[in-house]
Image 1 (cartoon, rainbow, N blue to C red):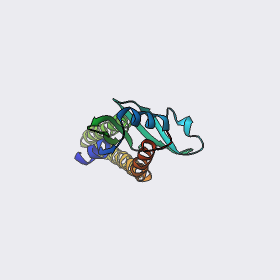
Image 2 (cartoon, rainbow, N blue to C red):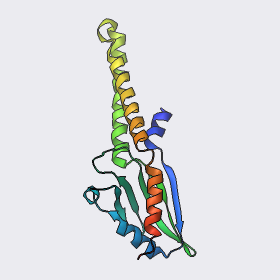
Image 3 (tube, one colour):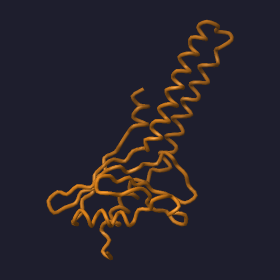
Image 4 (tube, one colour):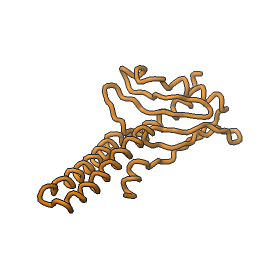
Length: 169
């Protein structure tokens, strides 16, 4: 069970620092992040929201949908003469909740079906197998989708850094 929780709720620390004033770093990143996926119809880009208190950015690739891609969630802060962007990479909250419901329902299905197997073994033996297969399908889906988005962390790190360190503002 601990591995399933880790699979769904794992978050990875993400931090960058810049030799810029806080306001300038926020403005630069805000100018490079689109509000919706429609801003990235022809080429990949960053989509989300940017403010000093909350940054929520994800990579969008045209014609590709992966709900299990990492999303950066964090905030800016000033440390001396440096601006620091820190947060975590994780699944969206919607995906965390929906996969928790999925796995919770499957576990409940398996437990109830084991009761039916105990009562009528000849008639209900395949019910727990269906639950186990659905559980394996959920784990497989999450792992395959994570594999497809394996480069998103590096891509986000590079593109956030490039957006803030731009010298043409």
